[in-house]
Image 1 (cartoon, rainbow, N blue to C red):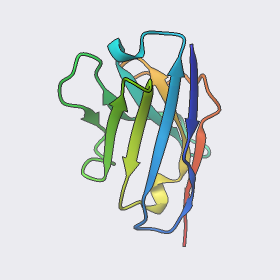
Image 2 (cartoon, one colour; image 1 turned 180 degrees about the vertical axis):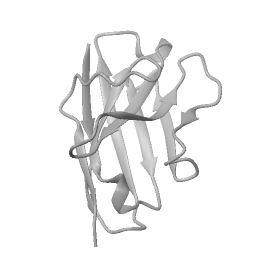
Image 3 (tube, helix red, strand yellow; image 1 turned 90 degrees about the vertical axis):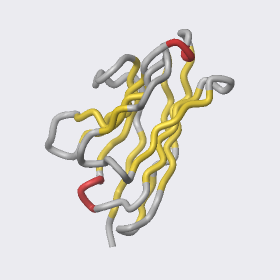
Image 4 (cartoon, rainbow, N blue to C red; image 1 turned 135 degrees about the horizontal axis):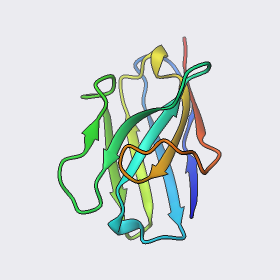
Length: 115
């Protein structure tokens, strides 16, 4: 199993970023996938879950209405569109295989929201 995240960066409050997670080594299209973030000094928290069999994605209350998870099964890639970013969204973001899982396999991608 390999997960490679990208798309992070520094953005001002109110800005947007789109994160990507390229997956390999398993049947991506059938698996539930989770975006996770970990802020400095805090434990990991799940952000959003995309279910492999379809259905409505799940979002943490802190990001509901601002973040959108999606996937492209032809590219084995998971995405997280982040809008209206806030300083409290600053964290290392990574994807995990499975619903509500927080185990980090890849290097993650850093998101910093600051003016």
